[in-house]
Image (cartoon, rainbow, N blue to C red; front, side):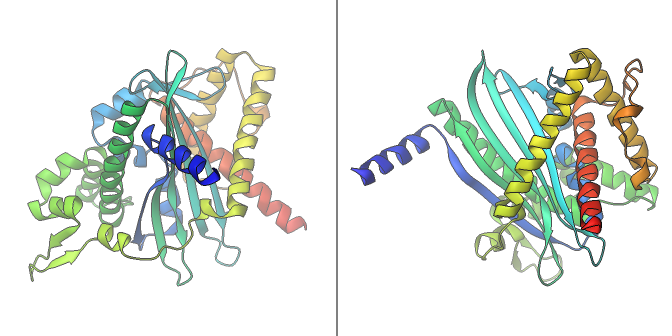
Length: 343
């Protein structure tokens, strides 16, 4: 009876288009740890995630804050709620970021009914040999409308393969070109903003075949070499940070801390004023980041907020939410470091 019930539940779970750990892609990167944390904690990843600029404009540039500080944007169909939390840890000996995780939840509703609910994790970890492994992992996809959910799950699986391939291509070849030549900076922007067009303009057909089929021809030997996507399928993986119990507890605490911070704001200000405060904070965080100021005293305090200052019009809502999540993660990190020094 117990086995039959388990099989029935498993069948229903699959029939409704639901799955746990529905993808796991990884690649090695020689880039600096803090640069990788900045990339995965910034809006650059979302540009690659959206594939085409128009999709980004529809989904994120037209997004709005709701009354609780969350993001609401265009769904497939209906309305999609987006929430994110950043978690990381710093190596006490080197001072570098040891691992970074961005947990992002997408919940699609139609007339108040949840069609599907998905959690993705992006980030990197430092392996025992000192190398850095970037990862894109689908934590779960829960669907409630059988046919639609199954279609969406398939789409997200295919989409994930494209995103991780384009991310590896961008990160290991074009990202972090600040201070480089104008041509290199232009290539970085084109690669990030519209990868399909960038590939068609600058790369041969064999590189597209690598993404689709996992093999590409070498420039000189023309021998087929396995891409990281194929190696990824045939190798044993180390446990990802968000899969460890201690980190899962920390992420839960980070989510709860963010909720409490927003709850405190809502208790002091009306929803419209909260939106202005969030916008102003994001603008200040961005200015600080662009200026390269990462010192403790630059962290924005609750007392510095001015309700009557209008948000910067050029900053879109998703970028604001990303900046705010990064700032909250920075404040939590410094709190943990101060606690360690005091103990």
